[in-house]
Structures are given as structure tokens and as C-alpha cells.
Length: 149
Length: 239
Image (cartoon, rainbow over all chains, first blue to last red; front, side, top):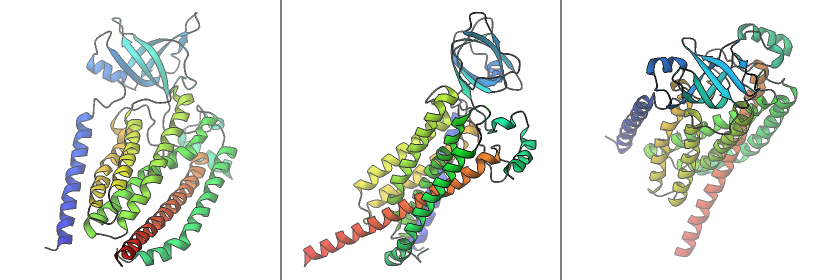
């Protein structure tokens, strides 16, 4: 075997081992590398009341209710399968709107309400111009084409 | 593979190519940014801050493409002993680190108004920060080892190992729940970014790629010249 071929075989073997190790460790991290719990995770894992957790999901349409004090807001976070009631006191980010994503730090109370200490908005992968708002992405593309022309 | 292994032949190609890449890249970046910033509408939720995408995304892509380049050069150094490979890998490292850093900085600037925070430790942001640190480590390692001797193989092995991080960056938003949004641009499927933003973004990405290539060629030429001078000085000292 030529030295070049020997090196090639060695490099290929090393690469396979390396990528295998990477994939395996990413796989082992699966749950722990999640940045937040979805409402479905909360249903499945039942974290104890008072434990600090991070909740993420979509703000349910029509669920945002402001209380009389002006800074407390009640809303529901949903992920398509489960729903979670949230209460937060403080200033909400600009992107915090119904139907948009949200990530909240806080804990569950014994009544099952999530009390958030901090609130971050989460943007989704859709980038839509403001004037096209409300048009779904499939219709949107054709509309855009006419706009460009 | 070895057609351009000869440094003289490589230089005869690199020398005339550099200004074209440099000025072509600059022109495309200027056109794309003017187009993207001045003539695209505000985004539905983000408003005007969407426009940082025309810099942020090309920086992220090229930060990752840079390490891919380092890994390819490192493999050709280790297996085929390609004489230009160690120069190429070292030439890529500095602009690669710069672009990864700019990706992190523009992302933080966007994150403050959009998310409400400069930084979170989610899968995407953390793995991108790791890429930046890998570049810094590579630069230190490459500076400590000579380009021409067998020592250089330590840097090359590090260059190959670092590639493990690239699929983690790419798929972090799919494997894990992250603060960072999912993938918007797809080559095979449908992109979820409106064409009004997508086109200037692609032009900007091509422009920054040409600039990146120009920087790499300039650094490779400088690196080859240095090696030549070192060799000449050694010969003069021996005479």
C-alpha cells in the first residue's frame, strides 16, 4: 500500500469516528440542550411547582388580557397540542403579540399557572413585509412577484 | 488536484484574479445593501430591524464556509501533502474569525429590539460562539507552528476536527428548541422569507463571498512571499 493511500484510509476512518462521536453526543444531549420546555413538555414531565423552568411556545390568539394595574398581563402559551396559562408583570417586548412566539423564565404555581419573571419574544422563520400581513405565505409569493414587476 | 500545486502557477492565476474579486465583491455588497436597506419594506413584526439580515446571514454563511475551507485544505495537506494547503488554511482563518464575530455582533444588535435581549445561551448562539473560539484557537496554533514543516500537521488535524461543529450549528435549530428562529432559506424546498428580502440577501451573500475570496488570495500571496523571503535569507546565510 502506498503511503498516500495509507494516509487516505486513516483520514477517512478518523473522519467517520469523529462525525460519529459528534452525532452521538448531540443525540445524548437531545433533551438537555433544549432551550425551553413547550407546554406539551410540561404536561409530559410534570415539573414540580416552584422549580425554575423556561417555557416557550406561541401566544394563543385572543388570549392576551391586561389587568387593571397596567403592567400585569395574562395569556396562554400553546404548541398545537397543549396549553399553558401564564402571568407576567413587567414591560413586554415589541414582538410580543398574539400568534407570535414567546420564551418566558419562571415557575409553575401549585394551581398550575406559570408565573414568568422575564419574557422574551421569539421570531419565527417567516419574513413577511408589513403591507402583506395577513396573507398566507403561499398566496404571498405570487403577490410579491406582481409587486416586483 | 496538483495542477495548481506549483506556487508560480497559482500566483499567475491569483494575481490577476484578486482585483476582480475585491472590487466586484465591494460593488455587489454596496448594491445589495443599498437595495436591501433603502427599498425593502419594514417587516410585519420586526419593522426596520429586519434589514440587518443583509449583513448578518452572509456573515454566518461565510463564517461556516470558512471553516469548511480550512477543513478541506487541512485534509489535502494531511493526505496529499499539497504544498499550498497550509498557506490556504492559514489565510482563511483570520477572515473566517472576523466574519463569525460580525455574525455574533449583528445578531446581538438585532436580538435586543426583536427578542428583548442581546444574548441567550441557546443551541444556535452557543455553537456559533464555539466556532468563533475555534477560529481563535486555530490562529494561535497555526502561528505557533511552521507552515512548511511536519509541525504544521498539528494545526491541520485541529482544522479537520473542528468540522464537527458545523452540522451542530446548521441543525441546532432543528434538533433542539432554540431562541433563534428556524431555517428560512431552502435550496430544495420553499423559502419562508419573502422574495423582497431574499433577492438582495442573495446578492449580498455573493458580494461578501467574493470579498472573502479576495482576502484569502491576498493573504495567501503574502504568505507565499514570506516563505520565499525566508528561504532566500536562509540560502544567503549559508553562502
